[in-house]
Image 1 (cartoon, rainbow, N blue to C red):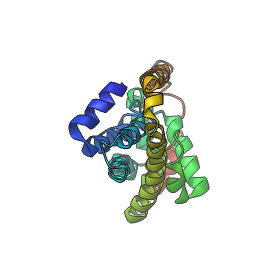
Image 2 (image 1 turned 180 degrees about the horizontal axis):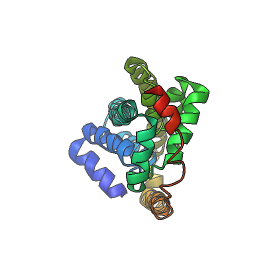
Image 3 (image 1 turned 180 degrees about the vertical axis):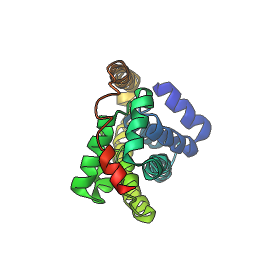
Image 4 (image 1 turned 135 degrees about the vertical axis):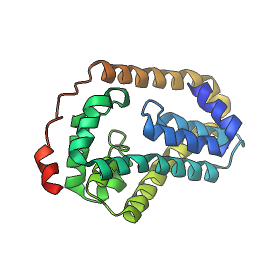
Length: 212
C-alpha cells in the first residue's frame, strides 16, 4: 500500500496528496496516518514543498468531509441511520456510529467539528451531526479547515522529521507502513464481518420526526 501511495504522489505530485486525502474521508481504509507522513517523508527528500504538501492535504480532507455534511443535512438523523443500517457495512458506518457522533456534537456544540478533526475515530463522522443540526456552512468550513490543517500538519511534520534521517530509516519505512496497513485492513474486515445493522437503527426516529 505504501508503494501505491508513493506512486500516486510521484505521478500526480501534490495534487495526488489532495486526492488521497479526499478518498481517506470517503473510504476509511485509506488512512491519513499513512498518507501524510509519507508525503512529509517525500518532501524532506526534496521531492515536494512541505507547505504545498500541508495545503494540498488540508484541501483534500476538507473536500472529503463536505459530502458527509450534506448527507446529514438533507437526510436527517432517521434516514441517515437507515442508510447506515442498509449500506454501512462497506463504509464501516453503523447506526451506533451515527449516535456516537451525534452525542459528541451535542456535548461540545460547534467546537466538536474543530476538535473532532483531531480524533481518528470521529474525524469524518462528525460532519454528519453537523449537517443534521444544520450548522451554518461558513462556520463548518472554517472549523473543519482549522482542525484539518492542524491534523495534516502534525502528520506531515512527523514524516518530514523522519525524512531528514531517511538514510537511517529507509529500510524500515516499507515494513512499518505495510504493518500499519495490515492492521487497518484487519480492523476493516472485522468491522465488515461483525457489522450489526440492527443496533441503533430505530433510535432517534421520533426526534427526527419532531424536527420535520
